[in-house]
Length: 166
Image 1: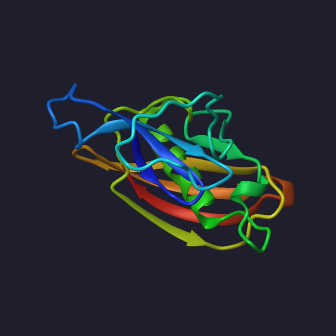
Image 2 (image 1 turned 90 degrees about the vertical axis):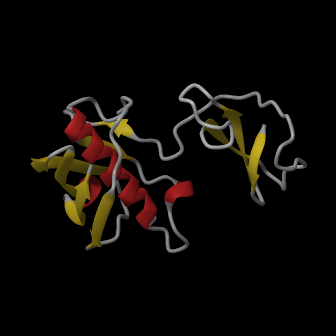
C-alpha cells in the first residue's frame, strides 16, 4: 500500500496487527526512490520490483559499536560535504550497536534512541567516515553512550562528538 508520497519517492507499507495495534498504528515500510513524481496516492495498492539497498551504504566496523560509510553523492549536501544527517545516523547506529554488543548492521530489537545530542566540529569531505561508540553508564533500562565520528581519509579528522541515550 502506498503510505506516503513525495516529489520523487513513495513509502510502501504493509499494515501489521501482530502486536495488537490498529493497522494504521504500525507497519513495516520500504522507501522507494523514483525518477519522477509517483503516479499513486496514499492508500493505493502497489507493488515494487528491484533490489533493496541500505540508503547510506553503512558498513560494519571491526567491533560492536563501530560503523562506517563512504561519502557518496546522495549523502553530500550542496557544498559537497557529508550531510549532517548522515553523521547523526552513524552516531545512532553505533550507539545502539554498542549497547546491544552486536555488529552494527544487526537488528537491535527493543533498543530505541530516546535522546541524541550532536556537536558538529568539522565537515566530512573524504571518507570513509567511521563512528565509534563507548557505553559510559546505565540507569534502569537506559544507557548513556559517547560516539566519536572521524574522517579516516582526512587524517582521522574529528567530525562529530555525540552523546546518545539508548
